[in-house]
Length: 94
Image (cartoon, rainbow, N blue to C red; front, side, top):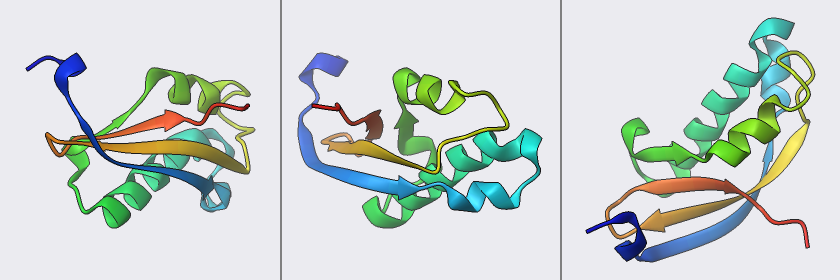
């Protein structure tokens, strides 16, 4: 089966606070935010770390302001497919 044949089982919009990343030094804030996102998805969707995929566009949004000045919170779309893979995508701003 290719990626186009995967079915979405569960889909949620979530606002993730990234304030815990501000506990780290300025140069480690974005990597810490990514770890916090994975930790949240792992807890709420009951999957392991290697089953979580953060999209390229979400990664670019997190890194847009640089490594030191990250966003305070972000709205994401979390999709769980039938292959037990969880994709984290940025939510569209409509």
